[in-house]
Amino acid sequence: DQQVKQNSPSLSVQEGRISILNCDYTNSMFDYFLWYKKYPAEGPTFLISISSIKDKNEDGRFTVFLNKSAKHLSLHIVPSQPGDSAVYFCAREYGNKLVFGAGTILRVKS
Amino acid sequence: NAGVTQTPKFQVLKTGQSMTLQCAQDMNHNSMYWYRQDPGMGLRLIYYSASEGTTDKGEVPNGYNVSRLNKREFSLRLESAAPSQTSVYFCASSEQTHSYEQYFGPGTRLTVT
Image (tube, rainbow over all chains, first blue to last red; front, side):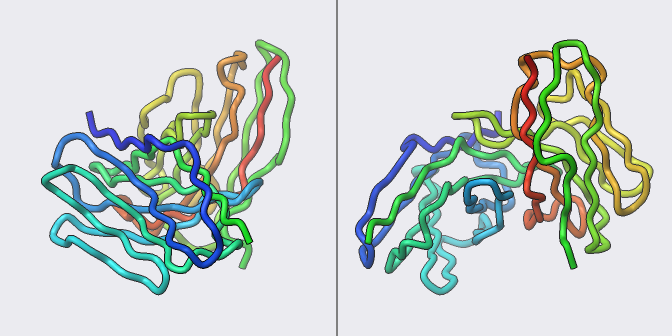
């Protein structure tokens, strides 16, 4: 069972502060973990990935951390901006599929 | 370059009716996918097509059929719609299977009454 779980349905952060979105996973057989971002009435868009051989991957304001011992993935957004308000899905590549978490709604208040 | 397009944007069906959701991509991608998104459940893969002429079941294929018409187009058919198929449907494409960077269409919101 190659699940990913996002246990926080929503998160509210002040503009300029750090947003931390979390994801837990079962099993340790994977190639990549991913984060996708989704605005209302649009399809998800790929944000950032991390492979199993890394602990951290950074792209501008977005950093993904992988803690393999805890089976935990997190996305840090610094500094948070109002335009970051969206639903964030973590996902894992499993075989020839992507398996998605339920999503976390991020609201960045100005 | 439109990316991934889906038609229709919205649809209401009565139980038992049939319909086809259309998807097209202009990025010359080999692989295409159909997902459904339900509240609290993220996106779940219905079917995918690794390349023109091939299709495979995903996580939730029951009640659906697909056709990879050509490299550009991948359609999803509901033969006899049920209220449990009320959902938002997304089509996606990627350069190849196992590619984690997928490009999504804007979605079709389907309601079955």
